[in-house]
Length: 112
Image (cartoon, rainbow, N blue to C red; front, side):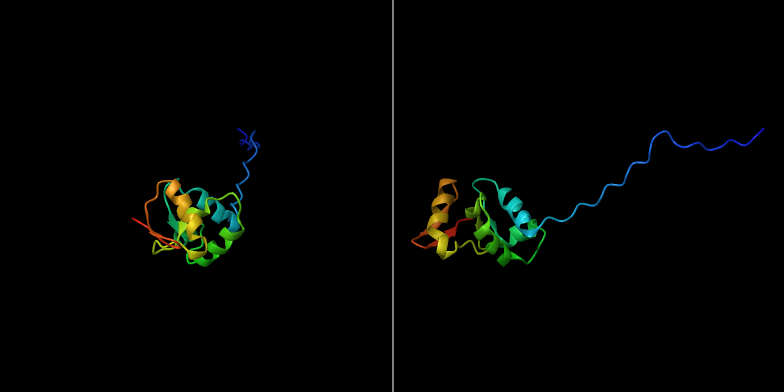
């Protein structure tokens, strides 16, 4: 009895999926900030961590100045204090979302 010959498979081998490339930092920050639910806040450090760049809190601040269509007011300092240059507008927007704040003028803090 002759030996059986191996025949080519009827289905072609599936190509291996290419590994996903990491997002550019601005896009990663955009996604992290958009994921913050209404009425909640995250610190710059938390956004940096969610964006895949732990320790890049200052970079998050720089990106928020340039990104459009993101809820930037939901990002605060780790201490809960709002940054003075935008504190009045940020406090107004956070209050509209139901976030509890204390303070006045340009000195605001999120109550936790």
